[in-house]
Length: 106
Image (cartoon, rainbow, N blue to C red; front, side, top):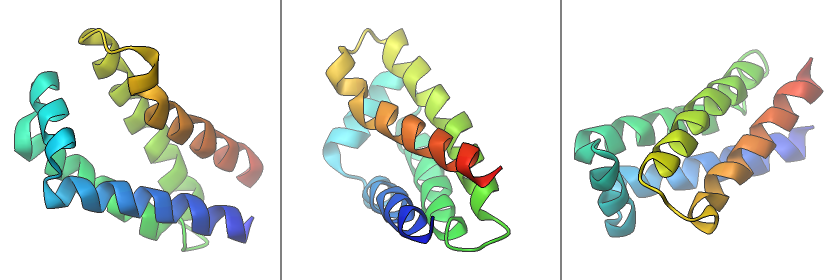
């Protein structure tokens, strides 16, 4: 499970850092969702925190569960603005990975 936690945590950290850095495609997407820069940075902080939390034994399951909840919101936003399925692929990957992590942690 440690390798899985490291890989999943690294992914969370990288996508969160991209949001904190204000990556243009992500900023455009958050504007489209009506969340703007503040929303993007808030999500980025939560993703970075989840990436770190996955590396801490007593927090790892909670971090993954938090990402499940957050990514469900992301998928909802994608559907609200009628994005095609391929635009939701990263969110769906995070949903699957986070859900598997939580289930394996129980």
